[in-house]
Length: 147
Image (tube, rainbow, N blue to C red; front, side, top):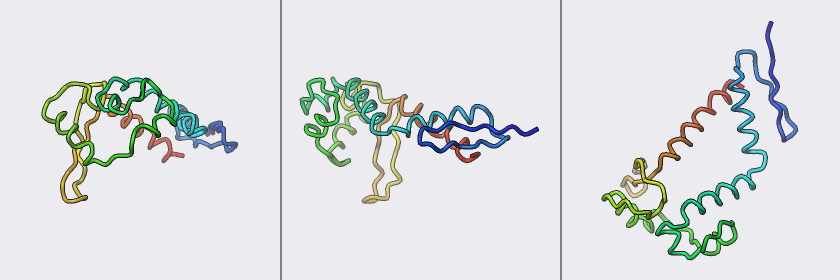
């Protein structure tokens, strides 16, 4: 006997999960729904967490946020920058500087770009939490594909 699971959706559209899909898939689909039902609130929360955690970094202190974690203050005080603007800080980290330059967490690895812009690869410092986030995103692929 085939069992069909219906994943409740806050957007009013319930997603039917086929019989071969496990309860873990339904759980992951519910997680996706929760995270995408109100993206503005999720983004505000994530920004506040990032700014709180990194308030004492060299980079954020430079702009005088004074502990503010709201979007309006962030947009008003922290400019949009390019990779080239951050390259000196990234190079310091790559050269072994372990101080809180761009992140309060230790840099766990460097990712590199494909090198297509201007022909040079760009270093992207990442923290362990970012690796965990990438693993979470990868774990969400199959439940969506199974749907």
